[in-house]
Each structure stands twice: as structure tokens, then as C-alpha cells.
Length: 496
Image (cartoon, rainbow, N blue to C red; front, side, top):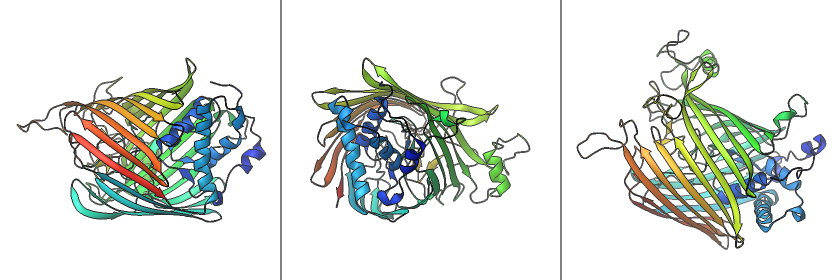
């Protein structure tokens, strides 16, 4: 990793680089572009950029600030210059156009089952039209589409991805349904992923992750904060429960990022929804049997945790180790009944192509690594019986609860517009033998299988398209979808 490659930041420059929304068609870079994440991580891991990259979407203002501080002629290799150029290309589009129009489609023989970063479609067939507008201090996106899936052949209208946001100082306040990915993983995120549809709600997030000027807090480095509140669907055990979340990310070192977060289900039909109930939730007074908490007045169901990503050079290759921990409960003021995710990733160049790969392991069995196993705890709750799910899909890891997944993945990126990705995963589902898989006799049993995935992405004029295939050695199913044996799909985005 390079040292002292990032120029010193003056407070005046930092203020000038807090771009207002009138310079961007969207306040953030979304979760649907694997190449953009790869390029951004390469600049960070090589020591040329210093911003938070574990929580998506990432603010364009933060990306813009870092790119402006880089002298392209000083970049030492074609691969780093290519990553820089791709980020500049995407940023330029948002800075120079006041209206963005896109059409998207997805066609497959079945709905996606195991979803990772960048897998934003959830149904078997989808067609969308998106328009993004901007004003002097606001931005709006209207995304409308029709979909149908494995369990509902009747086309359904949706507006996922729509939003309205305004700028107040260095804060973006908005309302809408946007995808979030909180965590360093590529195959899974234990807390917020793009596995489920985005939950509609309100949010506030920091626009540019500049550092504190105070000498007492400047050691935190670039920091970001997001808080949101959304409403879950009516067709669940506790109809119209709220989903609340907050995340604080910071970089005390250029090569170390840390994140702290909490998410909670609160309120809903027949449940306490007073301010005192909300305060009890925020203060962690929500365990039945503690301090007079009963099943009738329990304020909610929450998860909390931490993640980190540490980058370094390994035989001159930009690399990183990452870890995510989520607690399903609290004991002694700390998360307990923990879920774990860990991984290693690196990248290299060969014959003008850029390669990125990762090794990742995750378990959604509560306490299954460094404690006693607690079955049917992860993503479940004795009151909110539908659990940590939205519209049938887990809001966290796509393998849902009581499972393990081990993955190896690769990205191949050409100097032009071609991106090839591949991954192999082994899955142990229903480890507690209590749900998900059924034997012919009707008895429940543990299921083990492996999955292989391959995608090819390129561009034809203004159309960015992807061909993909997914193979499962055995069938898995949940309340929403079935993996089947083979899945094939074609998807595309046309930019007008």
C-alpha cells in the first residue's frame, strides 16, 4: 500500500467539495454496478483514495472529492488508471446531465434464489422505466415497472427505486425505496442486502464523508452516518411493522474502515407504538423478563453489530481482510447470539485484464462459531413471527437463517466494457433440521448442496446487457422462490 499519496486536506477545500445536488443526477452510486465497486475498492486498497466503501449506496460527493485529489499522470499502472477513468466516466454523466432516462429489463426461467452484491432483480420477469431529475438543491427519481415471479403469474406494478431527496447543509434528507448493502461481503451481508425488495420509508444520510475538524475527533477520519425508518408490508404476522436502522462508518486509518449499526422492527398492528416504547427500544430495554418487559409490552426485535475491512499489500497485490458480526440479542451491553461473516479479497492484472477474487464464509446460525448454537433464532422472533424478512425474502443474507455458505468468486474486467464474473458456493441449509427442506416422507432434514454461477456483461451502443447462468446441485426452496437446478437470464439497461 502506498503512503502519503493523498494530499493534505484543508478545511476550506473540504467545504468547497461538499457538492450540492445540482451537480449530480443522483446523490449516490447504487448497489447495481459491480465494476464501480471494484474500481473504487482498487483505488482505496492501492492508497489513492480515502473514503468509506462498506455501506452502499456511496455518496457521489465523497467519490468526487477523492477523484479531484488524484493526479492521473501519477498513477503507476494501466489498471489503476482504468479504474480511475471508469469512475470519472460514471461521475461525469451524473454531473453534466440534468435528466437521466433509463429502461431496464430482466428475463429468466425462474426467480433468483441466492443473491449477492449487484443482483438487484428479484422476480422471474421484470421491465422498468426510470427517470431522474435534479434541481438546485434536490433530486428525484421515478422508477416504475411491471414484474411477475414464480408464485404469482399475474403482472404486478411496482415503484422500487423511486425517491425524492433534498440537501440541507451536508445532509441528504429523503423519502423512497432504495436498495442498501451494509457490509464488506460480496456474496452475503448479514444485516442489509439486496436480497429482498427495498423497504419504502424516510432517511437522512451524510452527503460527503469529510473528517471532523476538531482535534478531539479528527482521528476518526472520514465518517458517514445514515438513519432510516420504513414500513413493512401488511400481509405479515404483525401487519405494517416499522423497520428502523442506523449506521456509523469511519476510517481512523487509510487502510482500515469500521462500521457500527443497529436495525430493528418496531410497532405495527397491535404492538406498542408510543415514544416511551421507542425509547426503550433505542436504549436496549427490550428483553422479555428484564426490567418489567413482557410479551405484551416488548418494544421490538432488533439486531446490532460491527464490521471492518483492513486493506494491505500481499506480494504487491492490493488485498483486504474483512469481518462482519451481527448479534441477535444483547448480554452485558454487547451483542450476543452472534452471526458471523469473514473473507479475504485481492486483485491483480494479467494481459491488460483486471482480475478480482474473494474467499468468503458466513453462518446465520446464532452463536454457531464462538458460542453455543441457538436454533431458529437468527432472523426470527417470538412476537414478530414473520421475522427479519420483507415480501417473503430475508432482509439479510439470502441463505436466510440456520445456514452456512462458503464462496469463492472471481471478476474479470477488460480495458473496454466487458465484465465476466463467476463464483462457486457450498451451502448447508436447515442446520437445525427444523425448517426449509422436506424429505419425501415429510420429515425435516439438513440440506447440503453447491452452486455455480457465471455472468457475461458487455455494452452495445447505449445498451449494457448481461447473460447469466446459475446451477444448483440440489433444490432449495422457501416461501418465495425455488432454486431449481438451472437458471438462465438476460438483463439489460438502456441509457437514453
